[in-house]
Amino acid sequence: MMTHTLPSEQTRLVPGSDSSSRPKKRRISKRSKIIVSTVVCIGLLLILVQLAFPSSFALRSASHKKKNVIFFVTDGMGPASLSMARSFNQHVNDLPIDDILTLDEHFIGSSRTRSSDSLVTDSAAGATAFACALKSYNGAIGVDPHHRPCGTVLEAAKLAGYLTGLVVTTRITDATPASFSSHVDYRWQEDLIATHQLGEYPLGRVVDLLMGGGRSHFYPQGEKASPYGHHGARKDGRDLIDEAQSNGWQYVGDRKNFDSLLKSHGENVTLPFLGLFADNDIPFEIDRDEKEYPSLKEQVKVALGALEKASNEDKDSNGFFLMVEGSRIDHAGHQNDPASQVREVLAFDEAFQYVLEFAENSDTETVLVSTSDHETGGLVTSRQVTASYPQYVCKIKNFIKHEILEKDLGIYDYTDSDLETLIHLDDNANAIQDKLNDMVSFRAQIGWTTHGHSAVDVNIYAYANKKATWSYVLNNLQGNHENTEVGQFLENFLELNLSEVTDLIRDTKHTSDFDATEIASEVQHYDEYYHELTN
Image (cartoon, rainbow, N blue to C red; front, top):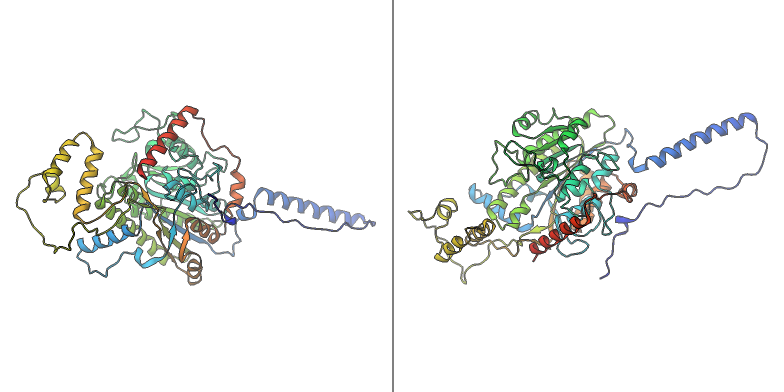
């Protein structure tokens, strides 16, 4: 099948050429020769500077106002996810049916999500479309379909004088944050991704602030990654957290020290900053112990405070670019777990509202854009489970037959078949979880079509705190768009040039020295895993 790529996605810059006529020979005075020589030397110096630092990387003039962009990714959230969360919020908080979420007020368009090799994208290809403004294959992290590194919005922003940050609730080395800050062939190369994020790459350090989970990928195997007994995952024996601190990073890895940052709204953060608050992913919001793990909103509060302060103190700063991901909406969708998903969506909405208020009160030109990389689970709200439309009558039972079903889940109408199924699955935790999630979904009249991703279009939400800027946002994002056009918007609004960044890293080595057999095995494992999720 022939594919067509937008010219602006991969086309390199073509430098212009100046034509000049050959001057006639004439006698030149000694004074004129000195003047000409001086002018030529200055010209050569300017050319050398221009070659070393492409025009798009040069800091903008002081007369050019700063810009801030906060780009949100709701991983795995489709339109039905928001519908379900809205209805849940109305029900549990006894709100009227016309009460809506903050996101609802800022809906402006939708995005098509396919990758270069599939109608159903994964998070890696989806994030690469945002970061590099081009389509790539499922599993690709900051590389094009030919496995060549592509310059990202975050990298270009850093080189153009912006501060940069990534805030997530999954591993900081997971697909979405990785696609903005690293370049590897497959998303499972998280140990390598961690080194890129800390600056071990030809461009050097391009991220000023990293916050989320994934501590294990910064510690060597066999070493404790936390006081809770969990161990590191790195196979190369390196302690990246120790290395980062030696290289000037401020590191915080527990709630107590994070709270001191939260109390000051991030003003006591020193950049570059690394905050890793879980060995793997931060727990689902429904399970999160607030005494141990910060919420997405709390992380965002610290990140915004830190970046704003640093930007204000640096006269050469052009503002900041911050990517925020509601990461675990996707995981709840994979598990067909409605209870977890609605709480993940609501937690994200709270974070979005906080950033919205930040932008409304900021004198700096600020834009918020929020969209999803894909939808997960094929969610359908209010599926019809009977041939007729029943009247809903609440029935309360006075006895508890089963600790999990009745006490924990509030399910009283289970069948003998349900119990038998759960009993026979006693040695398969994942299968038990799937069965329980299905029982909850069925009774809530929620349907799921897959444990993988779907190809449904996803929503785009946006806000700008300046009238002219808002018009620009609407002109570029209103309506239906390819996901790559979201990346193009970020590039154009921040006045960046991704092609120039790509030229700097196109031929650089971006893969590790893993044994070829190990790579083949990992690739096969990933392909089998992804195939299972999407079928």
